[in-house]
Image (cartoon, rainbow over all chains, first blue to last red; front, side, top):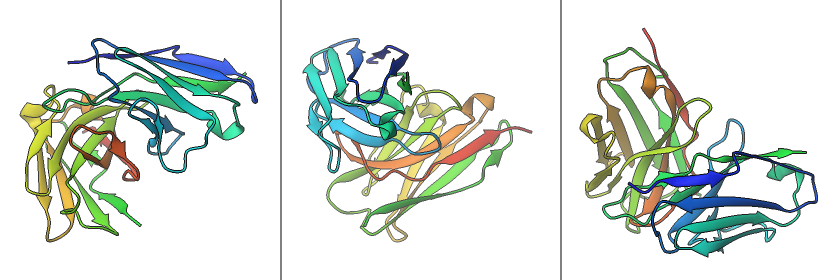
Length: 109
Length: 120
């Protein structure tokens, strides 16, 4: 099983500042990585897939990068609606065994 | 517009079977080579993929849950279902349904989520 590790567990950032979230895979997953945003009481929302492709309707301030084992989600200028929990997910394995990271809480500083 | 609507009981007794259904509207469950999956989230914790099924009945499961999970599809009703047997308190979670293609990410929209509590 591929283990996904996110860091930090909690990130405190001021509105308007940049946030950088990290995700590391226990073995290479090429670019088969997605990022999701989850707000309280809501289902996750897809932000990024293929490590760097924004999903439909996702603002340009969200960007993803990385390949292999190390990945980053960057939010360039934080808006109030961006404070939430972010999860990475790998989908590289066959047969499918999708695994998620434990999440990063992005909170207002 | 595609919607996934979940239904099923919110309370299950220990050792019994958890059963949930996800009904797809605004599109066909048989179309475009999608798989239909279940994901759960224990209170205050992260996401765990449970398993997925195609419209033709091909299934994939999380190895850690495989022995207790059944996922089925009913194309005539445009719905798919989850059964998890021998539940314990550790299975208390919000359960979500979602779609994806094989080897790809989960796609929006997800189901609304169902909190299932295992308690006597």
